[in-house]
Image (tube, rainbow, N blue to C red):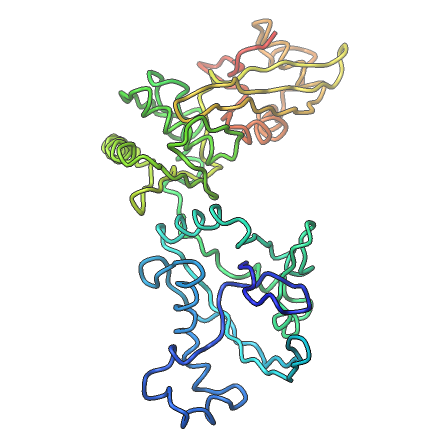
Amino acid sequence: MHHREDKDRPDGKNYVFPGGRLNAADLPPAQRGPEALPELFQSASPLAMGYLPKTLERELNEELKLVVGEDYSYEDFMTLLPFRQVEGARNNHALTEYGIKIFQVRLTLKGEAALYDRVCNEPGRFSWFSAEDLTRQTLPDGRSAYIDALKSALGDEVQPTLEKAPDSSSFTPRFSGENQLLTIPSSPDRPFLFGKTGKETTIQLAMTNDQWGLLFTLAWYRKGLELKLGSKEISLLPSGWVRLNDPSQMVEAKQFASVLADAGLPLIEITGDVYLRIAVGKSNLFFDDELYSYSLNREGDSDGILDVSTHALSTRWGTIHSSKAAVPITKNICRVIVAIQQGLDPVSQPNIRGEDLQRDLREKIDTRTRQIGLRKFIRIDSGQHIIAPASAA
């Protein structure tokens, strides 16, 4: 939402959708004279409504610096019923009628990254509202959204209507599905792992420490894990985008992206000469087992808590902070872990229920540890159960 430029409005609702009102510049020259006024001032004027796309293009350029065709495309989303309200400042009030069109915007890669960059650089001018926030029209900090016309037209359907709108992001993961999972190495000399868990292909690629560090930073940030920047050469933007502020570093990043693509790993997406991100969705992105450790906490032969955490790691670009998953597990799974620690086959132990064991491990453990980037806690290698991370004990 964009901060309202009209500061004299008394109602205090201070954020609106980017956009604005039709003005003469949006009309063709032949329609700008006084003879067009009667037609323009009709209720729901076809002339005025017909040129609102031009208003959109002008306003998005003025407010967001976005250029149609280069940064975005758009199409009609909905036309609201005429909205009437008495408004004005001080002692000047009038009954005003608005004809309003809402458009669905589809950002290009460049437009998306540039928009995020602008929003981050001007936090007072822009604010994020979810569909749920818009239903309430307020954020906890007091910022409020002026969507009275939308609420008048849709009533209780504001949230479901907005949630049905297609995503404006143009991000399409280059890898998707369980057969295209990717593990990022924890150091330059470690391999990538690509493919379905348990059937991964090893890809060894020569990387400099800076190349690996940049890729690891992009992947860690895309996964949504905590990252503390250590360099002004890089700025973090939403949705996994980063901005490289040193042109020479961008040249090197482009060269590295080409090397990865030639190796069958088109991982880095670059646009606008300064923006890049890893082109892998969160759910397909994992990190080397060597980055993780675990501890099992329980009293006696009981249920317990499995703590899985990452090690802190530093690159030229910043510090990867330790992330942790505390996973409640059943007595049976605790026994499985203890058996593996003792070098025993858990399936053959009389006190362990082996039926549906893999499903239980996947549902109870892996769904939680995948959130911090660990592919699988217990692997099977040559018929033997192995705990992937090292014990912290």
